[in-house]
Length: 184
Image (tube, rainbow, N blue to C red; front, side):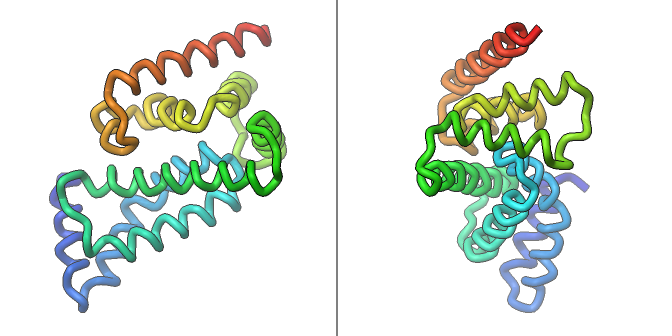
């Protein structure tokens, strides 16, 4: 069964009061892990990611009834998750009254201490380099590198032109390369 059919079935069941919970459970089963890892790559900390996943799915539950199928369901949920990540990171900066660099350092510490990371040294260095990117660039890099998302899909999620996304990805790659080369 293609993802389009499954999404249509989920949406159809969600419209019916009697099958709404079943539809939401299907939605969770299908997308929860993908959304979790998208968020986790942005905020690094497992507990923060878990909290944000809950927030995202609460918003999805509240707004799924008004979802218009002019974009894919996953794209719509990805947009909600991306916005939640950016809002969370901005609040973290404001709450701690710290600069972006300090938030990056605390994310890097979490990366080292946490069980998120059990990869080799090269993967760890890559993650540390990714953390230094501005949020939007980090989102674009993660979507392209880890999720292999097409620029057109990313454009729908982030509301940014394909050209700007390609430029952002290119800049992110250059920054990461520079960081990795400087560490050698």
